Image (tube, rainbow, N blue to C red; front, top):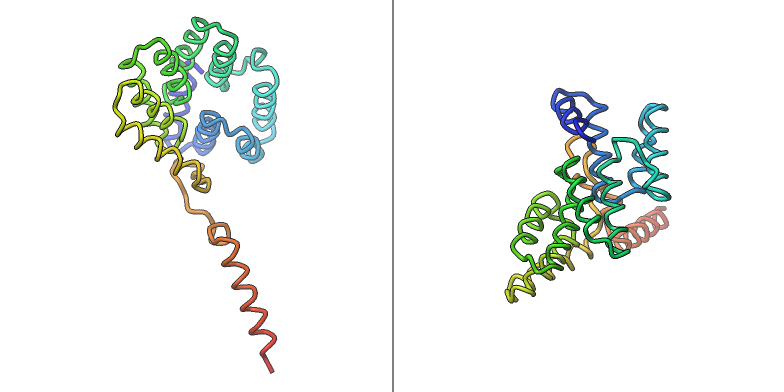
Length: 214
């Protein structure tokens, strides 16, 4: 991304709607919500839409072939995770560091780098990375699970349990959509917030009232 992210942020602050939309697209990439990103990309003008959809396809199929700077940080994270799985820890660390140089807001890059430090026993360095990730993505259960694992190693059982409970609560909570311009959580429509049994009751009551009409 290089200078792309600061440029986008500056344009977004100046009120550029397309830059604001692209920043939201990047938030979806950071959370690895590719399906949501694909649906969101459909709202862009044709040329940009095709670029975004092509990038998403390569992310899922062959990230090593992806050269679009808009996807550069996410590409490095994916290739770093692959390197971890294949035992290439030094390469993985370099890729996570590169992802953060491209996109300092990429909380998964921070978490994955923290995991490498935790694995090496560098607990304070890992803690610093996890805390930065937590500030960026307080509602990501994996960040809390990482912190729970770290506090377990430190022997701080109270904090370990607190983060485990928070991770469980976040996993059980219905997904929250974000406003495309601000990135802040927005309330779901009423029909999506009400439980199914409430709708069954309301429909039954409506049918009863209709049938009772003379």
